[in-house]
Image (cartoon, rainbow, N blue to C red):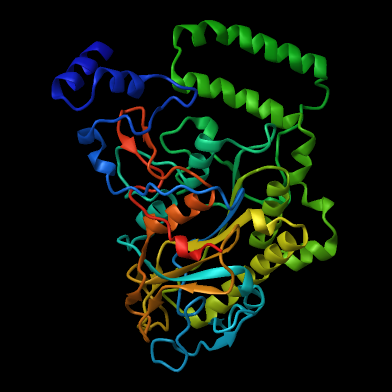
Length: 437
């Protein structure tokens, strides 16, 4: 079958024999990895990919995802005194000339550490599709699953702690793309309740270390024939998953998941809701070498009672985000940790008959703090009503390329999925280099 595929590709003239060998060679990732050796024809799909390189300004990412479509007009891009702005007022921040909505008073005190993006624009106006593109840079397809940013980071650079998960997701959104077409080892560890810690990480009562090791040895012996008969990527990944789980069970750093170790005043500062405690867990994890942690806050689909619901959501976000930024700064971690606040799209400038705002991918906002990002900065602009991007439009792919650029990842490096389709980390996105200090 491989010979038939090789002959077909070679006859088509798309790649040379040398390129084909590189493309189909197995790696520990189970995917093909190619640089600039591709012929012009096969590389044409990525001619517009950014070739910019830089030394990483961030080591870690804490990605705060506002699931449901956060309203830009009542958070990061207020339009006070206008019909579209509604009753939401603007307040001053710690950065001269930068205002936020009154719903984010605590975050406003940290604006000198970050940049607000007020010119995001997406082509996806439905939740699942918008969520997927924001996480992967690609449109949702039924034939392939693309990796999230944390998986790309692991593939290119690896994790920072060999005994803890390399990638952690805190929340309960089942739509997360995870590792996509990468092996299962690149998937995030899903933590539904940050206060519950990790379950089933200790042997059952009565199972001694000797018994546990004996059972592991027996399981390995029973699986040996199967693994040798079917030396496939997924089989290998399944075995490695057990190895990683055992390493984590025995890790001294497993206590990172135990929030009871934190002082009561610290826990209270983050807010006792799941999101706030998730932010605290994220800080504890990056402190111990976990390089990508996502924390989700849902409920932003405010078709009804927008001006009641948004202040409630913002209170949770504001408390958790501001505590996280202060905590990272006090511990000397903010400079190496990029904190991202993102969502799938904004909400309509027009207020509907239910005093709500509907889906609006045309113009919306996001923010980045720390990790080499310029402080007290605003990138992009919408018109006075918040309807149109009028300066420095940022596509989803550009926004994600900016995250990758901060991490020092190669934006034009082509990776082939197991089905031999080529992809880059942020599709054809170009990083917004002007937001870096």
